[in-house]
Image (cartoon, rainbow, N blue to C red):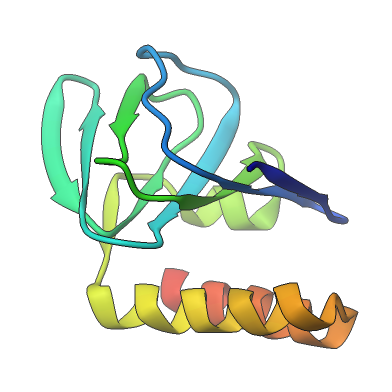
Length: 126
């Protein structure tokens, strides 16, 4: 089941297994696997990460290996997107923290709980 959260400066998508065709668009991505590592291809380079930042405009393809994922999409004009200038791994421990924060938010649907996710992600990008 896919869940979409439209927020002030980005969209968060929780989705089950996905394996889209290679594509590009003007949104920076932060993608977190809710399970094991994903196979990620960005501009013809291969990565095996649990979490990844992808700059706006970069050609990419994600194979989630059957795991649900969190996809944060930031328009290229946002401050967050400006911090995502290269492909960057998000280490497993930080991914686990983001997942935990998301699960708390999903249960409460409170703006305060979502704010914790945003603050944590901003800290990851610095």
